[in-house]
Structures are given as structure tokens and as C-alpha cells.
View 1 (tube, helix red, strand yellow):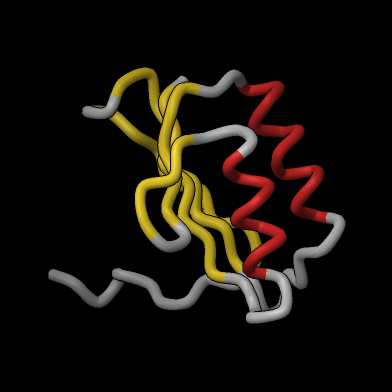
View 2 (spheres, helix red, strand yellow; view 1 turned 90 degrees about the horizontal axis):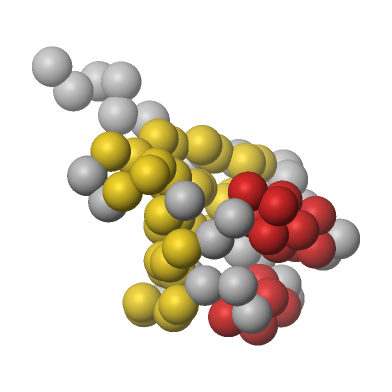
Length: 87
């Protein structure tokens, strides 16, 4: 599957997440990664991040799909803002 992963972690944990994501995906820019990854490898990445993630402060957003044109969004941890107010 194709994945775009975006994260927002506290200052003390952000470098750990950067190093972890670089093992699995391609670094695009600050806190943004993309690439092909299996469901098993994605679960592995999330299990590793769970060791240092503070779910009441940090967040991971995953856009996934079979191709770049059809992607689903999943948020793990605190959602920073919603787009529900858009008409």
C-alpha cells in the first residue's frame, strides 16, 4: 500500500520519531514521510512509536491507499484540528 505519514511530536521525542520513520519510509520534509509499505511493516512502525509516543500530546496522521489517488486518513493520538467547519 502507499502511505503518507505526518507526525507532530513533542520536542524531546521528535528526533526519535524521525529516526524511526526513516527506517520505513522516504523523508519528504519536516515530519512528513511517504512510500510503499506493507500493512505488517506499518504496524511494526506504529508499535515502535508507541514506546515513546505520548498520545495525549503527540499525533500521527496516516493517509493510505492502493495508489496516490485514493487515500484514507487515520489519526492516532491527539487530533490538532478538524475540518468539519468547512462547507
